Amino acid sequence: MPASSFARASRGLLLGGLLPLAACDRDVTPNLYPSEVTFTQAGLYPEGSQYDSQRVRFLVSSQTAGSIGQVDFDGHYQPFADDASLISTIGLNLDADRNRLLVAVSDPGYNPSRSTSATKGRLAALASFDSGTGARIGYVNLSDLRPGYASHFANDIAVDKLGNVYVTDSFAPIIYKVDSQGAASVFLENVALSAPVGTFGLNGIVCHPDGYLLVAKSDEGALLKVPLNNPAGFSKVGASGLTLNGADGLQLFNNTTLLVACNAQGRVYRLASADGFGSVSATGSFATGAVYPTTLPLVGSNSYVLYSHLDALQQMQSPPQSQFTLARVQL
Image 1 (tube, rainbow, N blue to C red):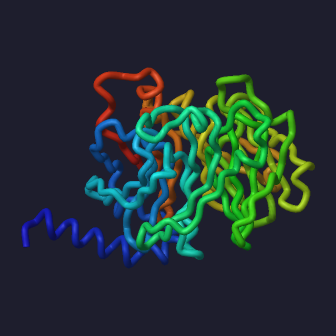
Image 2 (image 1 turned 90 degrees about the horizontal axis):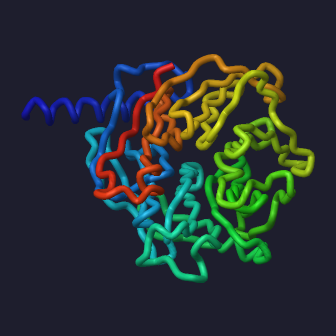
């Protein structure tokens, strides 16, 4: 066996064998993982990313193609799932307990082959796919719940222990809920969650096992705490002396530690809380540079961050960005 093939096979065995242990014990074993995974797919512009430990692959979305791709640790990109309803795919959530990949679907206008006048800037939807086969198993148009808003943008997804799904809308002051039977509703709607026209408001979202959501509000550089049993009682998480400008993807590393990717700053912050996320303090940061970091997949006990280069897409860079990176966060 060639040396390169043996190295790949060995790493696959190590990853596959140690991931369950690492996930339980949170034993940090960074040497098993590359510092970066770079893949080439011209003009892909992924925003969402997840890690599938069962199949040892990353899953990535695409604002320009709509399809979902898979990337191995050697940087090989392959298509995984696609559907005509996927105009632009944004946040992803791999719900391994229920064998499904949840996908936030929007239409910022970057996929002309699927964008229409009816959906451009107006779509917030949730699609779900079998995480093994890639077959579509569900789709719901969330923006139909509130057609009175001029703009909608489904951004990120969280799942609670009962299988209820929560989706942020960056252009409307709403968090949606889709229950385990697929019924959609407005979970939280409040004018205080609004953002100036053309800017992103509600963004990254995670579900804490103690019964609340943590939500990034990008335009304010703030975090919100939203109780599952009383969403109207949401509050701003105290963060004295810390500004999370451009807060995007969130990763709940453990019950007291949250990572936040701030694309406007080119930085990932590690935040700690000693009071159930009533407040947080920064305990470390990782500089990504000007690569528009977005989402944070967890690989064993290692955090990675996606370098999306979405700023190049927003500026209509020509030629388009062709290489994208998942970098291990070093804190």
